[in-house]
Length: 248
Image 1 (tube, rainbow, N blue to C red):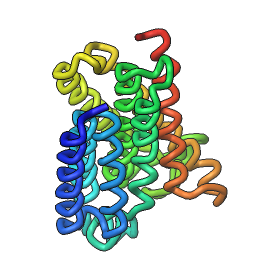
Image 2 (image 1 turned 180 degrees about the vertical axis):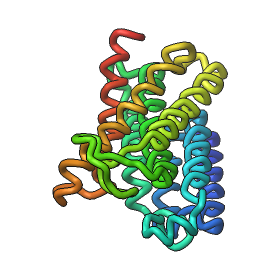
Image 3 (image 1 turned 30 degrees about the vertical axis):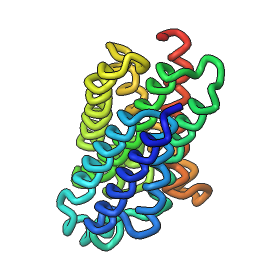
Image 4 (image 1 turned 45 degrees about the vertical axis):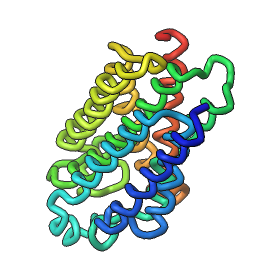
């Protein structure tokens, strides 16, 4: 457990980051408040390095969101009025990583910081991969439905494209590469080839789960987009957790 002074410092940092995100229209007000909670849980109960990764994810995701934003707006495939996201988006992408931090704090057997960091990176990789695939893939003119290969319109639930898949893989790789560099700084966190490669593959895997759910349950109205995000991130994290028994 970190010292009270250190926890207070992390809370101040999270407050500043949330205010910045709100005034820069990255989040709306409720989204900024929710981001403060997620960031505080992750940094205080988990690791400050996890918070750095969350910030990196936030900035890259916002960059993907703002990429050719006016074109997306004309296509009706934009987020918010200026790309800002609300509390539901924050929960869909941040709830799993917050739960991972809580499980660390509860000191559950076989769920130490090394295992948790491994799973954390995988969960964040899924979120990054899905965001990149959605925000960049919409510009590919030849998307197909993941379940049938049928040609569909850009932005169709369950639609995948070569551009989107490449973007997803690169985004998952960026998150994993950052963790590889950061985790060297803390001996409690797993650093090495498993941290670099496995979460990247889990992130790409989770992105495919998102597309499969989109083509089936989401397109039938049985689940929403954000519920799909949450399930796919949880799926990628679960795969990483199962692999951790063999890797760690």
